[in-house]
Amino acid sequence: MAAQSEYVFAGKLSDLKSSRKQRVTVSDRVLALFYANGQVYALDHFCYHTGGPLSLGDIEDSHGRMCIICPWHKHSITLDTGESLYTAIDPFNPRNIKHNCSKGVKQRTHSVRIEGDDILVKLSDVTEKVFESDRYFTEEYKVFMENVIKDPILVKKDPLGVPLHSNRTDLKGFKNK
Image 1 (cartoon, rainbow, N blue to C red):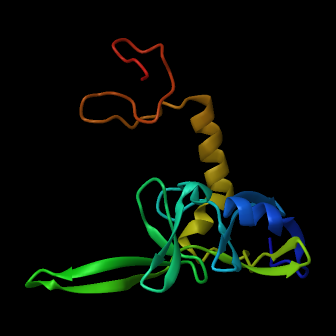
Image 2 (cartoon, rainbow, N blue to C red):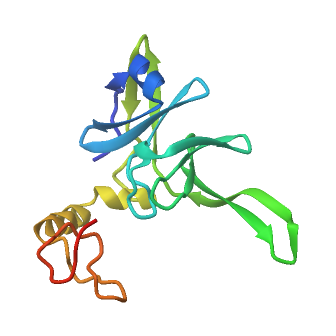
């Protein structure tokens, strides 16, 4: 799928202002819309790290950069560029804290335009998979997820032998809480 040549409707600004974050689908791509400091941002919805739902994260100001904090593993992603940030500490001088160190751009962002109360989004060029968040929009990932839905236990187990991420209740000695 190449970049859209035109902006398409993605939602109402009045709705986004009240919720500050929304999950939307634009041309088969799942996006997260964010409203922060009077600006609207669009990023791929699934966090580059392990696919966490960014629309459920918290929006925070990280030393002057607006970020979404992934609800699963607390990765900090800038809303404007998709850059992953972290705070570094010098182990030889713990008082020397370096803020907003970058892991580079990991999350794909998309162009946003506002017309009246309409939020319009233009997808960036997604033909080349260059960002880590792109993996959630590949055919391989779709096949993987279809297999997970068929049998959510797969082969991964923790050290105690309990299946991870399972909603199955037919396992001996395993109860969902």
